[in-house]
Length: 310
Image (cartoon, rainbow, N blue to C red; front, side, top):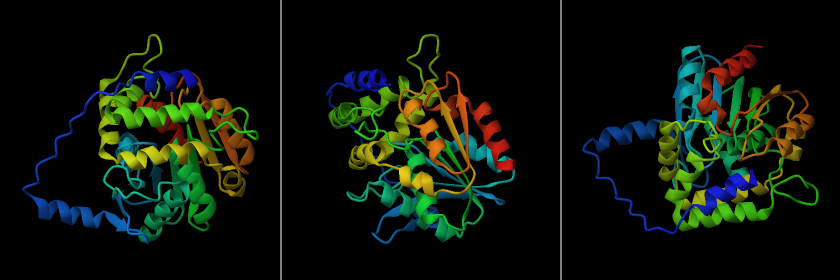
């Protein structure tokens, strides 16, 4: 995994990047009205965009870094078709949420999720978090979810702790995350292309065919967000220790992880989280990459549905 991330960072060159500003919409009132209906403003003035479709038991999706709620499109449509109410929000500084300069840490991420849940008055909800979203969902359920959460899914998630420390010798060295920050600051656009076309989906593995739509969609989502939020987010997902959060969670939790995850190595994540959780089921997917729900949706959606119905 170290080699995968460092390779992606190393291929990012300090090339000039020109991003043209989109022309104003001719239908600004309609866009603004729809936007107002699908956003909340938090106590610190941050606007959080969300989707809320369907009826039935609610599923709340928490996306990974540096993406948006769009990353869950396949799952959202699948579970909408199976009679669930689907909710997904864009994390602060990501997607269509506002791009403030502060609050890019797990405590704010969880509080923002709680604000959406409270605004929609969700109960008996299933929370599904991928990667950084798994950390966000973990902290939300542990600190804000009492009386509102039925189940939790952690998919290729960052808990318990990614960074190598004296207490976590199996973690990744700080130099890996410093490399990510340097690549982002040098040429964010190219860095995102390199991550998506390489280790994130395992497209750098021999014999694995690149799905260009996945690469393009990953890049599109990443470039919608704020560079500062994404830069600070690296510290949030790599240095936050979720040990006590995991111990506090008492709802059934499915821990899913691909054993060829080059972004969040399985050895220092999923099995350790499963041991800390009170009611965990660990499911390992041989050969699957970090973004496994996008490249193997039939398998992942089937297993999610079985867990939801169990």
